[in-house]
Length: 235
Image (cartoon, rainbow, N blue to C red; front, side, top):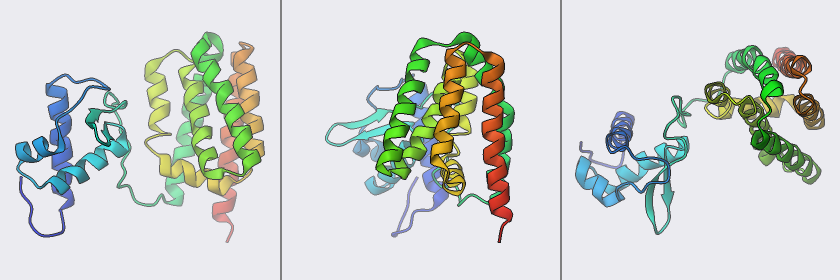
């Protein structure tokens, strides 16, 4: 691989990032393991150090690697994910937002029902902490961080099902589509109502009521979808 001038072609960075992932897989490295240095990777792939750094930053945005200042490059927590977020994705369209919510409304309610049956203790604890954090952020007016916590709640809910595959499916439509999720939360706007609905879902799961957990999750997502549809259609 080689490059010249100040502009690095996207295809080069994509190819370089893919080659790095292949190298991690070939070496059977796991999350937390140290990877090669930036200089070593530049020598290996015959590219400039800034090009390597840019490719690594793209991988870092997906959670596949971590860049630790003064320490080096490490394998990230999401290296084993089947689906990774795309940091280069364009600004989400209105159709994309609606499709995403429709998908979530089909996927998440049955997962919530399973969570109410299984109720893994660690995930229940995370859900409770997510709700507490959300309440504090609403009081502080920190809406940017609130969006992340709301998504954390939905991921914790999926993890409470005890099914790692289902949890990854839910994560794939929250983490992978994070820009869309943030836009949805911005358009929806009613943060207290969102928190109240999340708390009701948590209480149904905690009580071991799968029918209620499924119903409340469906009503929550259908309600958000209705608001989004209305606001997108309003001039």
